[in-house]
Length: 579
Image (cartoon, rainbow, N blue to C red; front, side):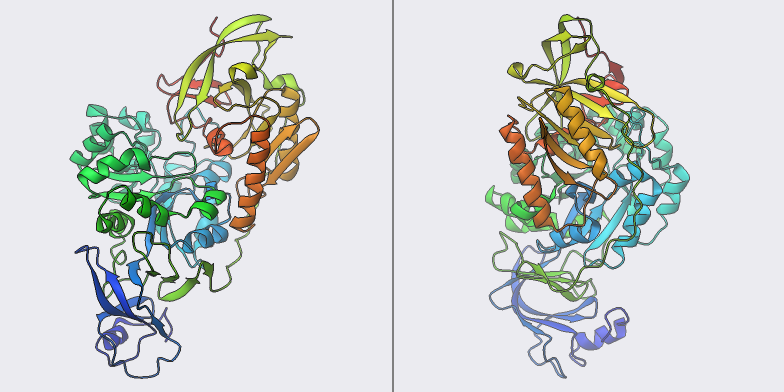
């Protein structure tokens, strides 16, 4: 029986027991998100669809090799990641699919705005081509803000007419997060792009909006928000019917703060997402399955926790033919021993067994061809990476990184300038930070100060720098900063740690964002970089991820851009030196 050609007529015959199923899961305890209960039943699959749920002990015909003993297991719908930027995993689409499937995620709402900021519409075409043969259903949310704001100088651009055309493509589910939230509230041009998606699902991004501004934002069209975990803001959004996407990424970890709200108010109109998780977190800490476990351990009812990972996101994103174990729905199914920790022993995606005992059962397709743009590093002198200032002591602003959050704060510090430039002061936890344009040969460099990193010597650099993804480097010594930047330029982008002549690099040859290496290998190399950074004094648990958001111009408060230091709340570039 060819799964792609199976008709509903044939599936009705399977449901009636008149024709053998293509796959039969026998004797498991099936979870119903509609009642919250587990009940004993067989699940008969016909091609890509669930044909019947009940007693199929008398199945007729040849089913040799197509019966799976599910007794002793719970049968769950496949899990959703309701909002994720797959590039941030550092993995190519096939390797990303592999990393999620082994954790039971069969559907991911993917917004590839990272690659789109680098190469424009070609980035979305790359993901649309990649998704067709993946064992994971990667549903594309078209980026709404490329560049993210007027303060970002992304090489890639996405115009309104291109957004409209992509919204008509197969595999596209809606419009990605409307990140220029202040512009959208006050009627900026971003609103014209959002208007092209009216009638489709539009993801939100509203980190601190409340009251009338939140109402204006919702009127513009966004249905969800994943940028707040403040209980007061969560309650306001729930009261208004806005969908809450509870996020637990590698840098932004919101689940614990949101947990008391979910225990008190339940998971109605709530879904789970990771937003940004790199390969090491995927390899070591599971994925949506882990989030469900933590919800249950924190006091959320098991049925409600599972709904937030299955039927709720299916409802939000209008994927009504999945999210439950029900006749006629897509056969995305997990077998797990303990539903309160739903890490799967077996994963069925679209009717096929795709993962067993933590490994894929078949080969991955190759990544589609992708032409990376030329890497152009115009900086040649170390002092180009430091803030110009007259010699002497100065009062200055520093971007202060926060552990476990992508928000930043403004920190006022006193630092010294010599030879016409501000210098780092590691004793005060103040280092230099510079953002270099890497594609268009403009030679633009934005410089500022950074705190919260803990670096005492050397430098760390990355071309994963949201959202325009230029070359970002932080360090104590400008010579080390330049050395790290040059090392990344030589390999087409990636992550690097430099101290003197020693430079450790993780190359990311796919547009400076991704690699085709397996998740476990990327995880090992990333952890080696982090250990080296820790040896140089870095105290943050995820320094590369935290640093990568120091450039994101749509999250409060201070950010580094090619044009200098940006105050997001005031929507203007400000001076680093203030006295």
